Length: 186
Image (tube, rainbow, N blue to C red; front, side, top):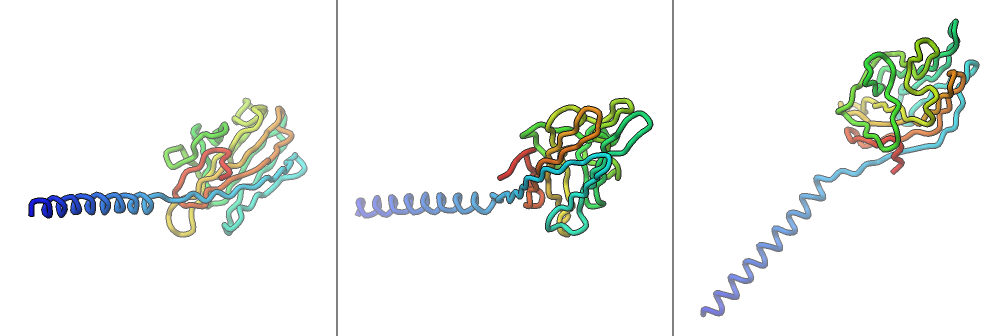
């Protein structure tokens, strides 16, 4: 009888630990969310004669308009987003952050809805992109009615003198609310 009780107790312990183990595995798989990052190589040249409007795929009326304007003392490169796009701008003066690869783009950053952002200008040497090589512009797009944002980046190279802006590639985390690292393609 004692042996039967010991076997019954051992079976209960084993069954209980197996159930708990399976439950934890199930909980961890339901909590995890998969990032769906879409990226594309573009290689577009913006000059004083040729502006470019970058329409984000699958997002109606969502765009970034890049242009170079002539000033009395040189040129200025700027980006103008649609009303559904916010630009990463820690300066709060309309000079977006020029991010390096792998920097995190998420909700904890400084975001702006200003309609005009300067990437580089010969007036007062404003902007953080001029002559700094390849840098990432972080932005976010208001999601499809769910209130969350889709975080994204576009890789730019603005030359010294602000006469040529190269738009090289971009990436969007299509999973609303999830961050993205500058340059992430998967």
